[in-house]
Length: 523
Image 1 (cartoon, rainbow, N blue to C red):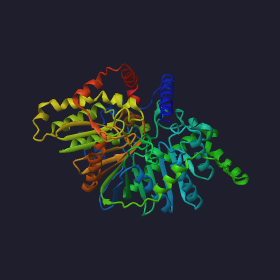
Image 2 (tube, rainbow, N blue to C red):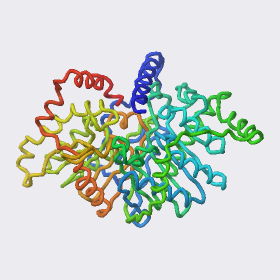
Image 3 (tube, rainbow, N blue to C red):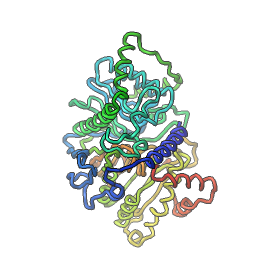
């Protein structure tokens, strides 16, 4: 599945480059510089809108920026891993009484996806508003496409999908039909993960973080180490949930408006007619392959009882919409790094840092901040070339440790440590696959959790979302998860190893890294 995604991404990149070469007049503002200099010095993550650089488009500006909610209006709980995240999702689905809004890059028709889809259809039949957003090009399997058709025929809107793989009709950038068309639009993917239940009510609940909808994220198969991924989600209640509703709805409306702009190619017109026919003739009955052993595991996890430790937390929800050239989440990272005084913990699956992130981390190290970075090793990364490219920055990152400002620090932990996830404890057999987490903790006071990778794709090409929270107990919980558990399954990288990563000797490794380097801005 992962190899297919890589091939598809390469083909998309080539197509985008071709379309860009055919483009004539570019009337939109050039924001390339802003994408790499998008930080207001001295600004704060909970500051006013003027602390952020908004979209360069006058009709968008800072309208995509959400407000700060104080601890009296928002509550947050930490989920330990993907299996708990699955149980939490099922609990919220079964308790839903008004609406379900679900967005994920990937929604696979495996055992966990099928279980979720059945509940969605049941709730739709009960009269709930059920809507789904997936990424058009990230779910190519025949069985998954059939699952989306099944949801659609039951009246559930699935944006990002069209029957017979016709979603490309809505992806081709057509100037003047949709505002702010970009020739790179085909390479701009919808990477957000939002799970919002009854969001418009006073009892709404949402889940945010890194998890897509597939067995590997929910750790469904304990006998398959590579199918047991490590990931991080949080559960939210209160005012911040309503911001997530706004973000989802404007994503959903974007898809609808694109379809309307296609005129007679508006596929919603034909879906309305199709549903009328199916209502008379009977809906299509699909067969979905499933492993009884994994189906049993899904039922067991769905029945798991969770005790969630909700804490009042100041919170701000952030969303990046690359079509409008928003960069709020990277700005939030830079602000949080700039204000850190003692400790920074970052767990990030696909780590290819920008020059600005590297410099911000260097400045923090010079202030004697203890910085721990955790990312995948090549053998645990589902896209190993990303780690190979990211490793090329290790030497630069760790070089600050030799500077006098760091060596003179009063405590030995100052500077930058880099760890790579191994999926196993030292000397033991592998138990876990890819580390897919995207979270960070600052001074055990603030935390950022979301879908945002510290790589060029999240910064420039993918729509992303994240929550910044302030609560010492929650920050301590995330710090404990990383330092007391995640690092037990990881290996610390030495400066000597970092030097070899920059200029690898192995010919095959060097070739694969060189390919990754060519496409670094697309990773």
